[in-house]
Length: 452
Image 1 (spheres, rainbow, N blue to C red):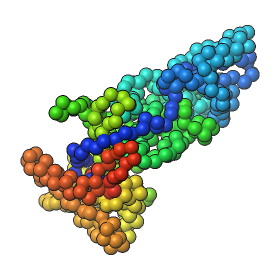
Image 2 (image 1 turned 180 degrees about the vertical axis):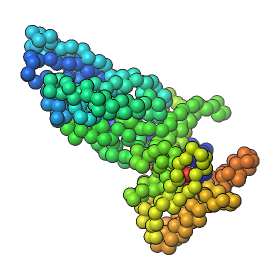
Image 3 (image 1 turned 90 degrees about the vertical axis):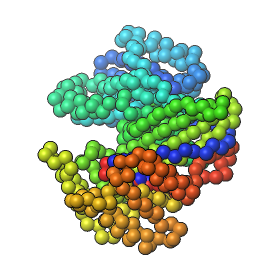
């Protein structure tokens, strides 16, 4: 589903339910970590030791982070898998061997590493201190961040002045202004950055999951991922919306899940980010997925289905001049693109992500006394006609105009029209449902372009 125009309205489709025996054997991540500090004599190499265990406390691992060299991020992972007794025996021996300098000192406990960042001075480690469960998909828990923490890594005397400098404090304050407790969510065992269909169809490595457009801490985790060549110690944060509720129908319980994933590419605030960039990425690209599955006891076959839609700014080069005196700033086509190359890249990206057909629902106004949205409406229609000339009839973009502002005055009528659009789209794309081996998968997308 891809929507353009209006005020970012998305379509909510009611799914048909089918039987599934989806495997619970998705990617494995550590469930809980304890951060400890290892102190040496002054001038001797110093380390952080991070102890991680799985959910069942049967697998324990050790990570060592060097603290003396502030210019490089040096992380070593012990290849040995320990039991709980073996792990704490190792820590006891490290502690005893350094008792004269204070031994091991507990620093903090956390639920995962968000990443590492460096400004002018030392590296900092970002940690999830507290979390809360917000839902579960097929037995895989989804969490929100409720508290985070930033810890400096370097213990070098040379970095003390830089670490407390005015500019360093300013950069730290800017990073801390990103509130991870609002609209960020993650999972240890379910790739929440991907749709249900992609999770069940593709066997990707943990490293590949971080390259997606929906993981907002991709850059922050790049250093540790490149060091260790795995993602066992980090969590992939998705920014957007997650809501799950239980529904009852004819004595059967179902879980309804709505997930909105916002792209980290070309994201920004209203008026400051508009249209498309040279790479075909549109402003405020949001993928919305609706998942419905039967709430049955663990281990029993469950019925599950999914529908995906996409919302984004109109894929043209356009902008608006912000002004406190003008609540409705003029829309400007800021750059000429005679061959609509950026628009083409945008839709080619959608085809790679979702397949054909792409159904575009254009929600902007049809008539205005002073042309604003209608300027975009006409140019967008021209771009679709131009692009369709080079496409086969089967792969052509389906373009639907619907004046949201005009029809929203009568809510009942709007819902009826949207219902017909949903029926048209689903007949073309299908829905995803899964059994042990999925035998039907949807192809294509209904796309909404917006002024957001």
